Image (tube, rainbow, N blue to C red):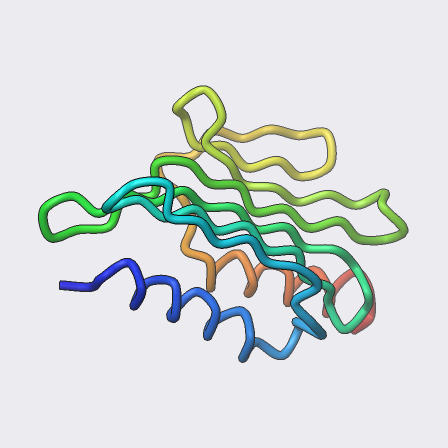
Length: 125
């Protein structure tokens, strides 16, 4: 069973060790109640594009569940936009002006890999 502290360490390790992340500009970590964890990170990529990560997770029985999340990346001088969230209790992917419903939330590492692809393909990174 993973604890909330282990989950937080894992998130920070994934972000801190990924090659596209130049720095963690700010972080806000809260434990509003026993079994709850709120994570808010502002990152910048090696291309200096902003990445925002927000998760609210709950430890229930032996599992950690993401109750609320938002992963956002802006690129090409703020014109390009990629976001995943579960606004209105449904999972969504936003790419520029297009919104696509999804069956489940992406893993953070998959979101970072998608940014990787954007940087390689569209930014010439």
